[in-house]
Image (cartoon, rainbow, N blue to C red; front, side, top):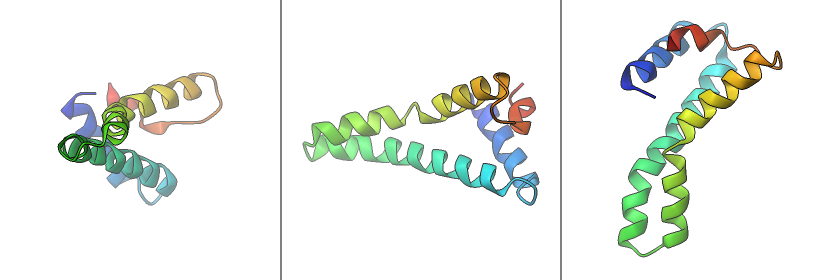
Length: 88
């Protein structure tokens, strides 16, 4: 994801927080875990925790994976994602 897409999703969730609070909370959880991956990876490497470093490295791809999964579920008609238009 690009920074522009991150910004667009952030703005969409802020503007629609009243109508889609669960969407906003889910996205904030994804971004929080992504930040844990950004900060925790180097720390885990410094203290010698290889498993944790691998886990935090995987968290770096979480926002892209979340958007990919939601887009796929939206196209299959399983969930409705109104914020897909914000990513274009």
